[in-house]
Image (cartoon, rainbow, N blue to C red; front, side, top):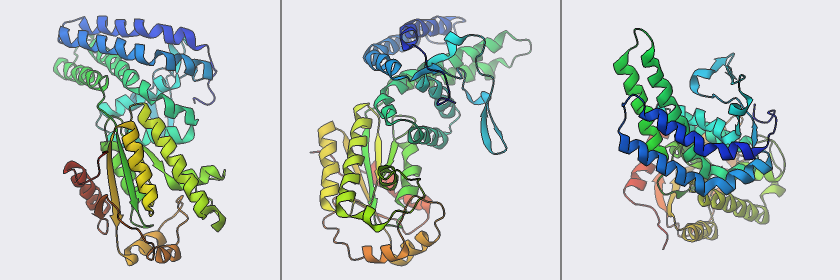
Length: 374
């Protein structure tokens, strides 16, 4: 939808945001359902966020990210038809209202998934969107807190508007509006980002763990997952499931892959968003580089190194279908001879179920059994 959308001049959109914030404040005050001081604080924080990101928004307008979008992309306007998500009921009556930054369009869906406690779906939507769109979007993640907050405030007002209908369920409607309002207040003040690195030999379940863990990594909608297998495929300009030759796995190429992962993570962290890197990290210098990045960005580093016996790893590799990894059971056997050296990260038993591994990792992070920047 966004790729096909018509580009537009971004200046008018960027200049309209303060009025949108003020309109939300006025609408939230009407009816007296919300705490006035909370509304004032939300409005103040929203204006402050806007001033911080205005130069970025203006630049995105010049880069073509302001387009004639759907405009009303909450969950009630998305249907699954023949196993495909279909967008409908777009704003057609007001081109100006629907001419926005594509991230503002996406933010509506992400926010609504969060409001419905669909953390995994929200994180999946974000990561798949980033994987399918220009890498410049990594440099714009700082706009999401404001955009999602504005969208949540709008939905709070829409919910309250239903009170005017005959036979409305007043308690349920007010509760729904309050949840959207509370979400708007939470999203506008995101917590500090963190850097998470998941390492381990092939077949330990790094990628499954990464995507399972990412939704629980603040700020919402969860960490951006940066996978070494995908970066390598992108470097060679092939589809994710295309098998690369051995020449694509030389030490020089692998070093370039890890450098690229660090660069992407640096861009994500610079936007105040968390990054989760998925790679083997078999070399000390690769792990040291991640620690250096955490120090550079002054963020917490959570290093997790998954371990499992060879039989388990080979069985998992043998059951893969349509995956980006080129690892084979023979590669797994060769990796047994790797000299991993001092890991310095939390060692996680990954021989059990996916749920057990996820819980082991969350426990390690909660207990501080990971590394921190010096």
